[in-house]
Image (tube, rainbow, N blue to C red; front, side, top):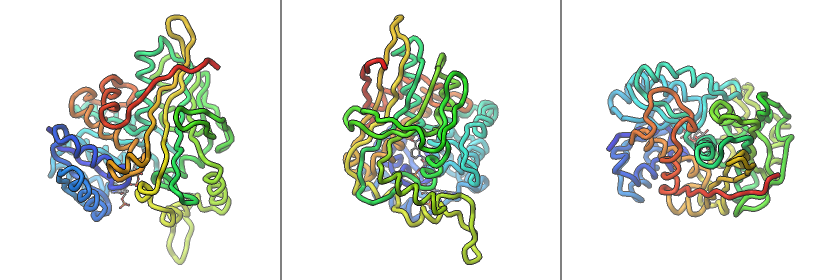
Length: 398
Ligand code: NDP
């Protein structure tokens, strides 16, 4: 029986609230705090209707360490689940240290004025969390998150040594709009307009954005165009998966999506450099976000499925082998359950599950940790139980 505070009333926050409220034996009290109080109220209302659970709400600026510390000291939750934006990670970690609260997030820290995400800022908190006897679990979404745990599970049970990992994220859903992003547009566009980067033979290899492409045949959703991106889990997995020779991350995009993105980039709309309009400084990408559909509104319209998994090669019992470990998630089933599309669902369920891992002491370990550093088994069981069933298939060697 534990009290949890969820920060961020967006698409993912909505799912985390629903999924925590479905398990009152674990999350006995739930608080939702975000910048806009009405968004908290509206989530609390639908959760009440769907599950009968009451959620207490607060308006909070998560960048304000003193205000968050005060709220945490007043409410005394055991765990803070950060599903605001990556910009708030450090201030929320500071507030957790001040108030003695365990911490969990789904995306690594990014400085607001530099499109660059790295774990170094959060890994620097290792000693402080250790000394405080608090757990900070980083990246407990799907990718990063479940994909890291898939790798840890493969390392523990399926291989004697892993050689290559390709993480593949396919969204074969259609929301019917000419262009929209499935999660926070600013974070999404910042991620995919960066240079591509993968790791091979001990070195990072860089490529122009979206310049490396393959056709990949996924289970259930079939052949998709997958583009190589840099993604944050690569940085921790190269540290924690032993013997690795190469790791890459791929995401699928339709031609229509890429054409819109190219045009927006060409006219400067994806830039994070502030420009002055009528005496006001504004980042073009922030403006773009305000004219695009709210990702939280896509759920009802989105049809189709996601398939996210890891294509892994390595050695087992002296033989080379290749597997794909994956989850398939249906957008409309998610909407029926928690009024959300599958992208928020596949992030919110692991956030709730990571929380359970800490609260039930499976993963309570003072310090700052990435998911693959923990025992994958209880988490893999939880995925089956809480809505993200997974499968492993053998693939022919390339
Ligand atoms: P949204 O933009 O839908 O929601 C973010 C919420 O955070 C909004 O409600 C926003 O409030 C609130 N917020 C932003 N800044 C502050 C602040 N300073 N103080 C308080 N609240 C704030 O994003 P998503 O729900 O789609 O994503 C949430 C997180 O999940 C992001 O960090 C994203 O990167 C991560 N993510 C991780 C994935 C994974 O697989 N690991 C996949 C998808 C997302 P307001 O609406 O009032 O502005």
